[in-house]
Image (tube, rainbow, N blue to C red; front, side):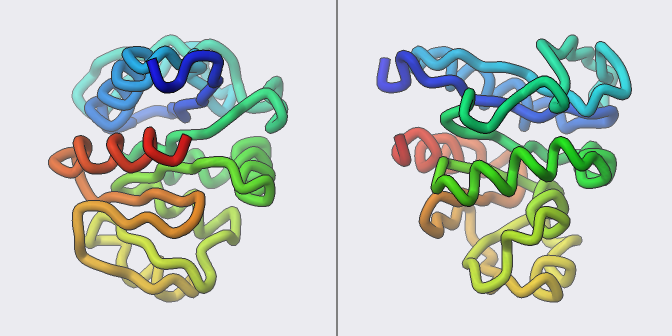
Length: 171
């Protein structure tokens, strides 16, 4: 139980990618972490791209960065809504400033770009947002996982084993 005593947020919004929310949630719990599923406050429950519901524990307005040891930003189409939430962006910026682990997969890179924390960083993402990442100042790589300091990024659900292995390793 490598993560006993750690509190990690998993961000959720409508149209999240189910595997990119639930696989990290279960892996982190398996390692002993307390996982808080955190939404934007637009709803108490969100549906994934394939309809699977996620009732969140709280919304970002009520979470302080000092309460968290890390954060997971999943993909799907949810990041397009997550990136419009100032409380979400504030959490991501503050965790980054504190050097706390941030795991981001697929379209989640949009949240990093909107939080303005990708400039000069090495990362990967879903190929469709490669240009967005490069235009935000990142050095983009097409590989299953990229670790740059406190930041772990991956491309797709197929990369989840490497993604979670490296995120857990940061603790």
